[in-house]
Length: 301
Image (cartoon, rainbow, N blue to C red; front, side, top):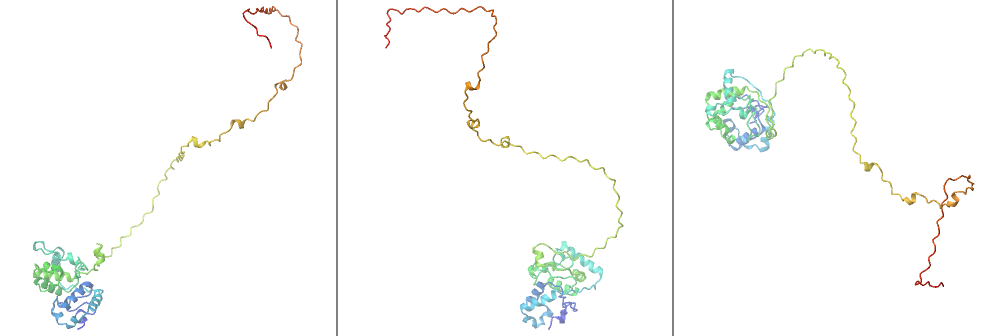
């Protein structure tokens, strides 16, 4: 039996209580569920009647999952708004006194789910058939479905009442499923935000003409500071003069004849002057004393 007989060509089934919408489910989730059906680790009344599933190869399963994952899921709102708002409280906040965790913790605020967080990921349940959601919650609560990793769904559903299940199914059916999270986004902790609604255009305000500012007096110009001269080394300023030989500096003067330098002056007769000075007496010669007798004078040779 071809898959489209129950799930539709684009994955939007019309069999509300038996066949879920496969459009928009994570690829890894579809692979896990088809593998569990083939290996008989998950059982379903309708899927048990399909014998062809036992002949599916791994490549067939991956191809089917890739096709349905890229389809767009349709949304319907058939329940009453008051019932849906009652289910929203459990979906968003859970119930602390009964230890019921909020559904949005694993499936997202809009039911988009998270891919590859656990084996098979948390499925995208937004806009899924209300009847199918209720059927699976009862199966988890009663233990007839047990292929959830770590038993997370069995623990979450074990204390749900029939009223909780009805209101949750109604609320989830009206959710708009968001784009799924990829493994790269989860590992790098860069979660994609749900698509934002287009913002309203801001009202245009008239532009006021610019006001003229009074002219300010020109600022006094300050003379530029003279750059500080670097300290100079007096020893470096004056180049060292090479040592000079004092003998080489002064050329030797030729010897001069003092007699040749001064020409002889002709004798001049001084004028006769009358001297008033008294004539000096010439010193008298001392008489020679005869040699003493004892002394012998050697004869001259």
